[in-house]
Amino acid sequence: MKKLAKPSVPVWTANQLARREPGELRALLRSAEELRKAQQRALGGKGAADLQERLAEQRRAVRALANLGRDILADEGRSVSDAIVERIAKTLDAAALDEGSRFLLRAGRLTDELEPPGFEALAGMAPPKRSAGDAKPRKGSVREARRRVQAAERESRARAREAEVAEREAAQAQAAAAEARQAAKAARARANEAERSLAKAEAELRAAQRE
Image (cartoon, rainbow, N blue to C red; front, side):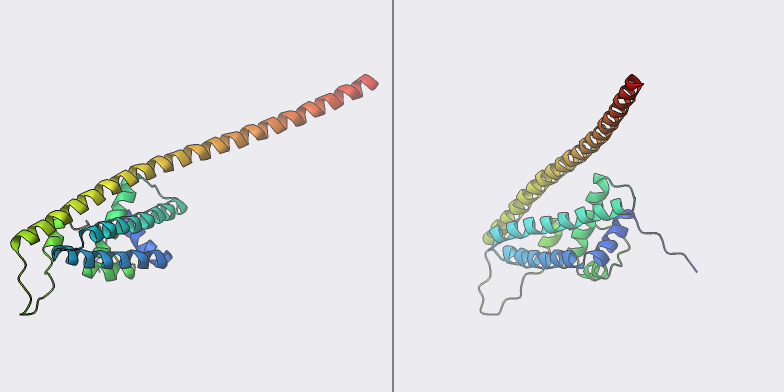
């Protein structure tokens, strides 16, 4: 019988998140569903501002789960890098937005890393069916709606990149602060030991002087 391939670290982590953080995962899936609805509305010519908000919300939900994934890897004593966390985030984002992968993610049974769909793929989604009495949308209005969707997605991605840089800087600052606290603790322990040695030496000196 052929052995199943061992999942990559990002896939393993995504599956662990599904099992250990079901509440956060549900929040991500709800966010992805709202994003898909907002994309449908934007492609229909309205709701570009709402789409930008939904994109930002999706990024936050993905980032929150990816950071929890970083904690899981650290707790397991496994190597954690920004590149690994980014791959975890991409897999979570893509799985939440894909109809088939969503169920595998919820069950903690993903087998492959995934890439989030770009706007081009999302633009190919079929718009809602119109009744015979509905007016046919003008081509110009559809192009304008797509332009607004593209602009909103670019803006959201730029803000997401800024947030990621800030998060990395904050993580580095926290690590440096933790090292500084540890060094201060060790220095205090040495100072206490030196004080005890001094007190002992003084006691011995007084005893010697009394003899």
